[in-house]
Amino acid sequence: MVTQPKGMPAEKPIKWTSVNVQEIIDSGYRLNASAFGIEARQVRKDLERCRWDIVHLGDKFIEDAFYLGRFKRTYVEEKVGIPFILPSQITEIYPKANKFIAPTTNVDIESTRVENGQVLLTRSGTIGVVSYVSKTLENQSLSDDVIRIKTTEYSGYVYAYLKSKVGNLLISSNNYGAVIQHIEPEHLNHIPIPNPSSVLKQEIHDLIEESFRLRDESNELMDEAQMLLKTALQLPSIEALQEQSEQFDKTAGVLNYSVSSSEVIDRLDGSYYVPIVKVIERHIAKTAREVVKVGDSQICQSVILPGRFKRVYVEEGSGVPFIGGKQIFELDPNNKKYLSLTQHGNRIRDELTLRANMILVTCSGTIGKVAIVPKHWEDWTANQHIIRVVPSNNEIAGYLYAWISSDYAYSFITRYTHGAVIDEINDVQVSEIVVPLLRDENVQTEINDTVLEANRKRTQAYNLEQEALKVLDEKVIYAR
Image (cartoon, rainbow, N blue to C red; front, top):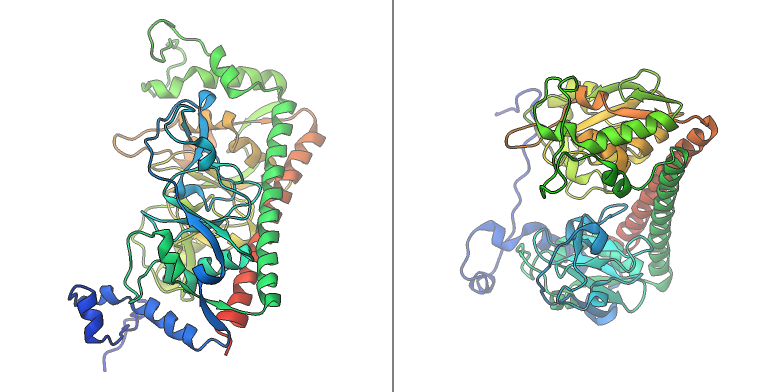
């Protein structure tokens, strides 16, 4: 008898299915197992046993599903452009444009905007990623890589179904279960979906609507905290501060500046000495009660950069959720992996585990994405490309996040960027980022509490969505 070595993750069970000759012919005589996706075939069989009538998504729930025709995008600077949300951003809690298209782009700009209550679905690249349009996304311009679904009714129910494991497998596979690389709106017409009672559909719809309403409120609170911070420090816009930056030769056509030899430390790269940093430092020195650094013990317990390691992944339910830098802006990160507890127990305990109100800063590849850990991520893990800033306590955590996530702190983070091929920063450098403490401690407390309240609402929103998915599974999809 062969036994599994102690400490090694269990082998995955063999997945199998049977196919008939016609399916093989229709698939182009493919004999590889992936051509007949087993999991998608299984969920179709599960739906056959559902107690509710099974209808086609297009027949019962879709009034219209479409995407824009392709158009050439002309990207311009923010001050003259129209914010443009990318497909990879639609699942973010608070998607903010980092691309801006010219008003003269050869497309009807109004046709690119999405409407409240629409269900969004990526159709190429990473297909089947689903989102819901509420106040935060309403009227934002999106690309032609996103299908807009206008439902006849119960848009929250449709969203929940497409987000569920069953629905997502179905939209990303053909009738034989094989994974597809591209989705057309017509594909949605033939997706099977249970049609439960109006009471159940309304219950799921209302839970999703409330979840997204809480996300919107959370985003408004985050904006409020930023405004309070900006007002307290009398900070002009980042663009106005840029204009105050001193250049050596304004006629040169490129960013250039002089640096005194006394200011040069052990860095000779120009990005470290960008003038905007000096301008902000001078400004907050005048308006703050005190300027400290992230590593100061009065605001921070520790700054943690996990070491690199070879990861051992396991099935969901056998390990701890594991996310990366691309996912930290999401409420419920897509494509979570699960890290083996038996293989990485000590590292998980000492370096990787996330705690509520920790501040995360991406430190490799894309530098300076900042997020605050919500309560529902407690005991999850994140990879070594994310630095953890552990606040001293919850009386400073929200304020510290408000500053580090601001446009003003971004320049302090990115000035430390180094690396010949992949951009990097480290924990020592993050510890050196300046933090202004406010003269009015009541305002500082208000900013802190506003951020923490926003973070609480995000966990409430997550819980409501999970409740909707649970109702969908237990009372609809797997109801017998």
